[in-house]
Length: 136
Image (cartoon, rainbow, N blue to C red; front, side):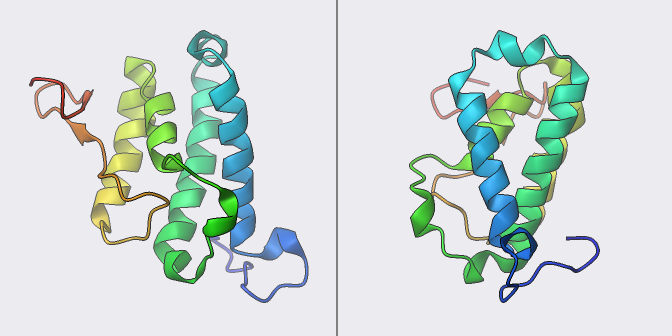
């Protein structure tokens, strides 16, 4: 993304805008199949890698979201929400990665998302994600 090498017309799939999304969905498949402790045991390094993939996915969605076909991914839940939930598993990873990703997404709330559910809210007091059923 940073070097401007991706294209919607590239002949090599790894150079298309949809390729970072495929990587993100592959990672989501792995994350979804593991208990949270299996991720946490690897420490902050794994959260940094998850952040990099989710951040790149968000970059693509913000820059080219309206040009990307998302119907072939078969997504029933927003991948962004899964990444945020995963990055919020520990206080350190939430502070360092989840909050940063939420702030970036809030800069451009009109981006096309894979689902229409709203962004998770953060408690102003604690910085912890809250849902509609939680009380602040």
